[in-house]
Image 1 (spheres, one colour):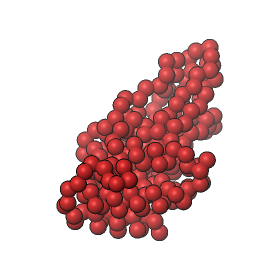
Image 2 (cartoon, one colour):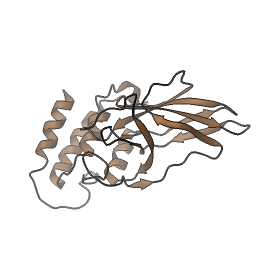
Image 3 (cartoon, one colour):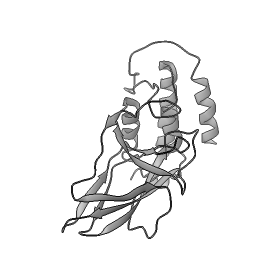
Image 4 (tube, helix red, strand yellow):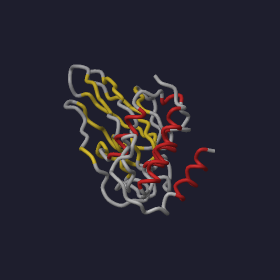
Length: 216
């Protein structure tokens, strides 16, 4: 139901052309086209992500279900990926997947993903750990991650609208969302283009969606 409403709403956001300040009265940034999100071309804006020293990625980041899984992090069923992290040291190492971390598909047919909150896991000394990492789709017109999907690390996105959205989500229990609030909100905020008045309407709807998610 929310997804159907979402698509109709996005279609209505393209008709106004008024110009206002870069933020609305609530402090929310105006929503503009974000490179790499939706159907927009270009590189996702943000800062580079790297694994901590002593942790190596073995093989590819893949949409193929790899079991057994020794660590799970993140939510979002459309871009579930699996990866093997090897701790090459003699001590446990903590790995943080930060909110805003993006996953870049090797194929333009598959969705890119974004991690919605900070997630930390510990990899024991000397082991290779299969990690399942959940992320949300940022390209609604593409296919969800599947067994043939391959990914690389993208940047930690710093687009103002995404930073604001992630701040709204930081205290929410995403395990109880069932993709009913976060995923539609990501799609709305990453719509190809909206004008200032439509941005305000979009944020009102997004805040309503997120208010329905229980806090941690």
